Length: 495
Image (cartoon, rainbow, N blue to C red; front, side, top):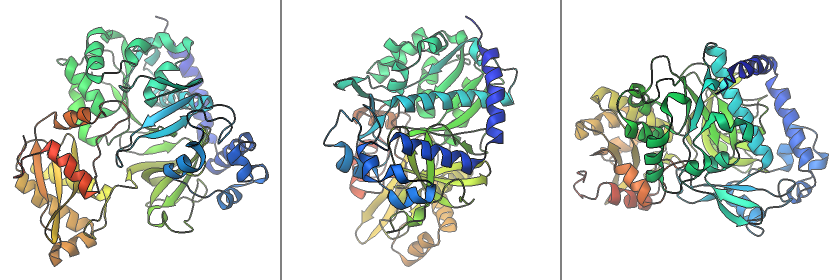
């Protein structure tokens, strides 16, 4: 196989130099104006006067924030599945089916040809940052294994396909790049996840794999299936995203050969938003010119009548922002549902801290999702429990209530509940007050055997790909339904 790394490295050096020179605000405003110019004659563009918008402030005044439900009801439902000249010029050729992690419903996210090109460019940027830090690496001396979803593409209308975003990516790999990509489309689009994992374990040319990409939870399934020594002896880079990395880092590490680098990306169905340009845990650099104009709304203001809409020119560090995007697929001021916090302004570099729906307040305690995650990680570290998959939700006991954590792992569940309680009280004054006032009981932790969450995801048709285990389930009825499957014993003992 031809080693394409020298060509990638030459391009990457120029690309990284250009990114380092770029002015974030100027780059983002120029991108927004290009997007509005392209979409000015669509139904949405005419309704919002895109032709006369000249700057970010005018755009924010003309185009209100919308969630998925608003776009579906107001703009897509009537014409679906053929979305032509509605939010983006021409026909949308692909629809990404995304069930998300919180509401449990399927979203239908338009994916344009321009968005696919932008995503591929961001993927190349990921490799460029890797070579910037590891100039002797040779990622194109072998293949990239892209572990995608379990959903094959369905033709849902004339010239329109729908399925998992990773399935769309597999179908759209340009022919010049196919020699460097694994698996072939016939394997990538296998509809049954378990059969796909088995086939990949048997047929993947292990020595040829130089780059591995996917969601950590699903990557771990493949690596466990392969077993033994590091299954990919020449692996140089693992690209991960979609879920928090720390719970998986130590569990995946034994499967990686010495010197293999890891790099986090923030790639959603709505766009490829950010890439780790430095080391593990040092934040993700915002993609400024890859088809997405970014806005950031303080989480506390998201549901207010006139929320403050920050962008690259006005962001501040240390604030939890809801992510809003305008894209080359026709999403305009679209609330993604993720929460981020910036650690640098120039260039904008962020940490993903949770989801806008990741809030527990069934009892008035106002616990943010990132507070729950941090408290659970701290409690597990003290109790020497290695968490795998987990979820947390509210349950009532008469006039009182508690938080119930379902977690795959071994250890002392009662001690873990006490430690979690202490960490939550230290992090959140409302939680501490409700515990002192008697409204909240001590958290309950149920330890589950390995594989329970995968069984649940399989039973609900959400195994593999873009699907993720919902860590925070705020709705008591939905959490009770999950708990009945995961831990049906009313005493809280795992099945």
